[in-house]
Image 1 (cartoon, rainbow, N blue to C red):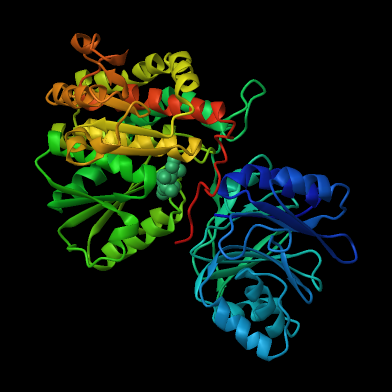
Image 2 (image 1 turned 90 degrees about the vertical axis):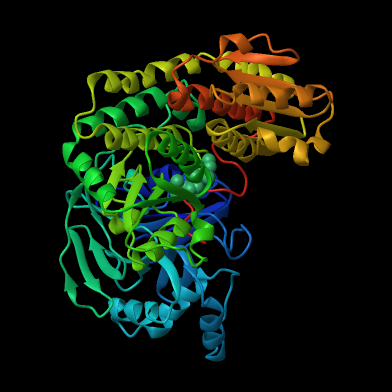
Amino acid sequence: MCGIVGYIGKRKAVDVIIDGLKILEYRGYDSAGLSVFDGKKIVTVKKKGFVGELEKNAEGLQGFCGIGHTRWATHGAPSDSNSHPHLSGKFALVHNGIIENFDDIKRQLKEKGKRFLTDTDSEAAVRLIDDMYEGDVLKAVCGAVKKMKGSFAFAILCKDFPDKVFVVKKQSPLVVGLGEGECFVASDCMAFSKYTDKAVYLKDNEVGVVDKDGLSLFDFNLNKKNFRTEKTDIGDDYRLSENCSSFMYKEIFESPKALQYTAADFFADTATQKQVIDIFSKHDKVIMLGCGTAYNACLVGKNVFEKMLDVDCETELASEFRYKNPKVNSNTLVIAVSQSGETADTIAAVKLAKAKGAGIAVITNVRHSSLTRFADVVLHTKAGAEVAVAATKSYLTQTLMFLLVATLLREGSKVSEEIKKQILKLPQTAEQALKFDALMQKYAKKHCQKQSVFFIGRGMDYALAAEGTLKLKEVSYIHSEGFAAGELKHGTLALIDKNALVIAIATQRNVAEKTVNALHEVTARGGKVILLTCFEKLKDTKGAEVILLPQTGGLLMTAPAIIPLQLFAYHMSVERGINPDKPRNLAKSVTVE
Ligand code: M6R
């Protein structure tokens, strides 16, 4: 949540910062701001609204060094004044994270006569640094951060050092890009990947100075630290082509490629395969955890593991797990799933499990993300950059990763060519599912005024229903719920009348007809039903509009079933005049609690 950018070098800072902020808008988009040295002083512009609004107001700003921010409000409503950068004395600061004890800091500074101008926690940080400054910025910053509780990535300008950007990290992500005679700072290396592919990922409790020639890094006691420069390998995925106006739409259509790369990479990576076999051999219980869509991928994972392996397996919402006293010990393997690898709840859950002795496997789409630092094994999905807030192609690669791992564990390191072939066919099936695009648009036109949409299924199909409903509500703002089909009659059926739309999913042979029974209970009460099934014999199901999906075999049905639902959510969003890429109140990377 919130995106940070910084620049020092030979280019116009404002251009680099605006370009970077636009790329980081997925992290928050309720307001944006920037500060640059114009040669004499720090000039700051901040605006409520998208980065485009800031761009109009920052036009013509001169200078080669600056910082910028795109915000997802935690403390204080979105407004010009609550936007970052926050200013105090000689300092301008942008912040990603939460200063949990900001009230105490504020009170103490107020007692010393300091005035506060915003409702944010971040202003407390810059005022504290300013208060502790006696000519040495790093000393002031380290002194201040030692008094702060919470999470923070800061980029800071100080008027006395017009050619430097100061950086600090604790829990929120921060990466420095090293160019030729220029350097970049960002929450995500996508923001500068068009200029350089050399990056330094800061670790927790590190503070640094960035100038045009590079980075100097220290711990909070100002001991110098070494760092490793990594090569970033970001493709072009994070930009829209001229003929596509939505990331969500583009990313749904990238699913075949994402599935293909993920499977091919896994089958080729014998080192990771060995690690997987090894770590599973040491644990006899599995807990899969994640948040939101990543959690829904775990629901699919549990179904896959239970069907393919003889393993004791549970799923947990990371946000709940972290506050429980979970039964976890050195026999437990936690599989944490996170597209971004930066979700605060998931990281906290993993830390807790690790402290109790659990083994940790991480399924993530971002190789250098914070979560990977706690992992014994990293399972890297190859979905490519996913920018839209709604997770689509990443979800499919997460579910595929569970299938790949289960296949490996069942078959041993020599997975037969026949099985590989079946899995490698998945991208093709995804292509077939994309052909439902026009049909889903038609359904969206027809149903976009519905006030409630229910998704039902059993077993694996229930897991898919959970994801179908999340996708729809987050981008269309329509009330929606996912149910185990057998549960309808235990209460929810009371909500069904002629205004309700129910989407039933029946892709699993052993329960498909049971789901159809539930569907009849709905139509008998006047509800409208769309049935997604891969079984020919259900294609004339009375009272339902049937979508006949390609048949791939039970555990491979995630892609063909979920892609039409993702397309449905997308078109519902568009029909309702919503921007599917930037749904209200949300951000892609949830780095705060
Ligand atoms: O980056 P993560 O996968 O850890 O994010 C977890 C959730 O915030 C995320 O899956 C969210 O539910 C989706 N963006 C919804 O589409």
